[in-house]
Amino acid sequence: MDQNALIMEVLKDMEPKIQKGLQATHPQEREDLKQDMRTRLVKVTSEMERISFWTFKERFYEKGLK
Image 1 (cartoon, rainbow, N blue to C red):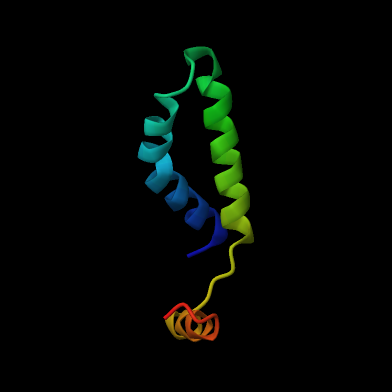
Image 2 (tube, rainbow, N blue to C red):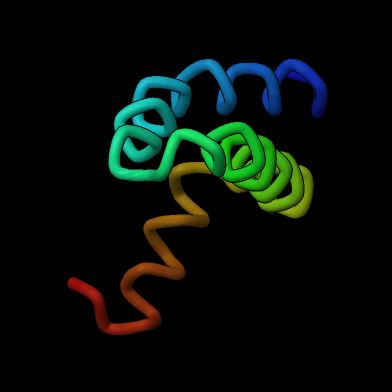
């Protein structure tokens, strides 16, 4: 999966949570907050390191998170 497809998938998956969070926000601030959350998701997703399951498991146990 290329980087753009991954970003789009994350945005699609997170959209319901974004919408739910916006319900607690003043209506005049919702659009700005929605844009800010999407921007942060894009940034985090683009910086995310892709690792295999086995690498994840190895790092998990190294940190003592058993």
